[in-house]
Image 1 (tube, helix red, strand yellow):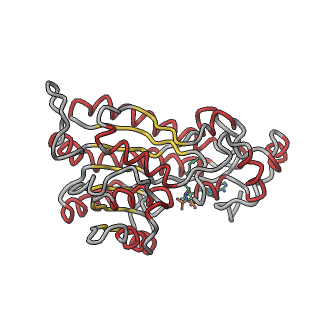
Image 2: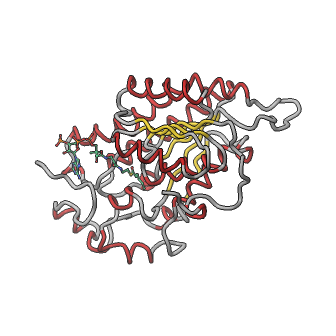
Image 3: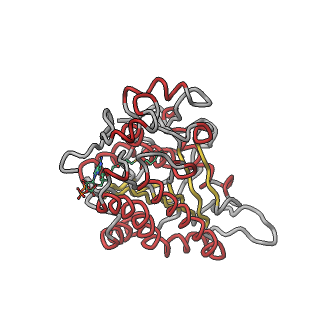
Length: 317
Ligand code: HXC
């Protein structure tokens, strides 16, 4: 379904900004990543999104393609970022059909609320595998293409003039702010996102000399997303919103605009950084979702599972 432009990208950027560019995105059918990709497609890019669910991923690609007449968007399902081979096949198809990869968004992630007592070793591993190993696999599968693109779009160190062909060779890892202060029920995600951050910083150092930039976008609470549905119990929404410095949640457009900034010329000298897009949320809320009916530490010590969130465990504990 075509969405009004203001839902997913601001009017700041000029149409055609990303003409002839290709973005590859994991988790691209998700609420945040699909907005990031939709914004890039609106501004001229072609895109390949991958995900585990075939139907959801293919439908999301068709939907994103409505952002611009003539847009090419491929959706490849049955791709699990934990498996390098399935990612590699998707990358090969993307390059074959779209001609290369200029930008990568490593967005696939897993999350649910569980205390350490409620978190099996396998549950911990699942999130580490999706977030950390999945990001590494995404990097490994796309790096040769990022390096190639980085070479073509390199800014001359003497003249420092922008390259007429625009930008390329850029990767963004979608992380979080949860691990900055940590919060109950989020050990697995805190550890995983700290790993993702470290990975991005390493890429910036090792591949900067080859013309690749690597950055992190750390979204705060973004309204209408799978992440927020999993992290914020429905009966805590009002009090949590009120506790936010800007008195509101972020929008997917806020994240998409940050993405455009990093991939466009505006981001040419930005690498090894974290762009936190959270309205100063993390500076306020060390307890995160552990407020209201989840008041710390009473609820944690009760041993109960968090109610009124998506992604609750349905089988054994
Ligand atoms: C305790 C849980 C659990 C829960 C799952 N598990 N949910 N344990 N509490 N609520 C356990 C299972 O019991 C199992 O352990 C293990 O986790 C693996 O579960 P599976 O369902 O077999 O794994 P899998 O199919 O790979 O699913 C991965 C998942 C799932 C992460 C568990 O939730 C998922 O697919 N999520 C993808 C979508 C998602 O999470 N999107 C939100 C991203 S938002 P046992 O021991 O029983 O075998 C996001 C935001 C970050 O990341 C922060 C933003 C601020």
